[in-house]
Image 1 (spheres, rainbow, N blue to C red):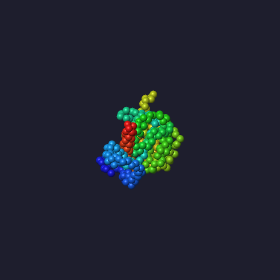
Image 2: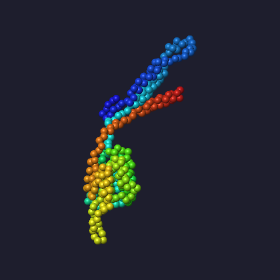
Image 3: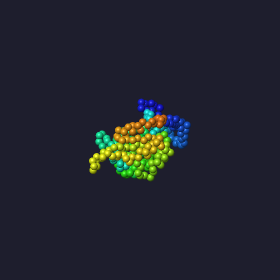
Image 4: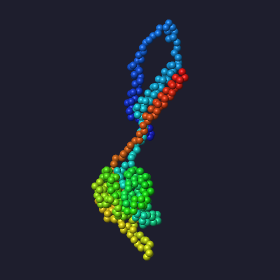
Length: 335
């Protein structure tokens, strides 16, 4: 094992080095047996006294060197050399947070402001969620979009960049005009039911009431409670807005359809909290509060990147033997 500044070089099976002297031992233990078939010639002593040609001796020496080098590389490859990098900590906090965002038709209402300009509720939600997503380093995040039905836009992942991109590209109307809150909760339960109870969090944002879907919010809340999932609900939309009518400006409540009682019941029954966002600033504060949820303490997961290196000595063996075989065949052709 050799230590370097940015890692360690080691062998997984160092005991394979014991096979290195094996060819020598086999040669010593099994001497060559030659059958003697002598031809008596009167000038044998004269022939024996002649010097051996250097070409044959040189060939034998080169062959032995090549064979020894190839065998040594095979033994090194069998020892499984590898490079082990420095320890790397995995970003684990123990939380899995599913974000459920309402894309129903009412989210186009321009009763909130962003930078002093009236914009749609969805535009404000995207603006506030971006920094929230960036702050959740170490959490697994998922994204559900719901309208007439609920859709899993992004499964739970550590890839915050991709999740934000999917939210950024979402548009009003792609999920329908109505609001299926129960279906959104049911989908979150389905995707997170196998996780430990203390790790499941759903943050659901809506501006209305349940008007679509196959599952009622009450039944979905019961399923969430049974699986140990906490639901934090956010009701978004201003309480007051001025609109132009035939009789002049009139004050209306653009959030009249918001079912706060249902959202509060969902949160209370699952151990979560209900928040009311009447402005962009309130929504930012709400996500900051949710951002302070204490993570479940876990032991840090650490791994060391490993890179197998046995392919290099094996590659050299193939190269050496290939060159030796090609040279041998050329020599035989020339003869």
